[in-house]
Amino acid sequence: MSDRYERLQSARGARIALPLVGAVLLVVGLSARPLLAIPALVVLVAFVGWLALRSPVRGPGLDRLRLLVLGILLALLAGRLIGAVT
Image (cartoon, rainbow, N blue to C red; front, top):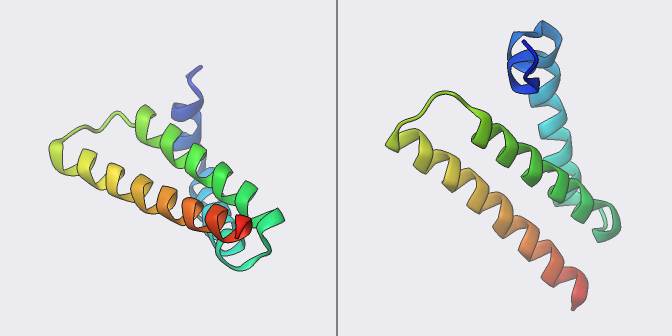
């Protein structure tokens, strides 16, 4: 089990902590000031993208769902970036 994804899937603490960390990053990304929100959303997009790429389960429906989630997160990030610039 040298792959990080496999270790994350097998660790019991990670199964609890990862969704909580993701939720905290999302809440911070949506509610904090842009100085804190933008890095939180970047980390969340990168982590969700990494998990989507490393997932061994494939299928057209799951791939579309992964793209939808990443698209929503990228749209939120773009909105925060535009809001910070203007």
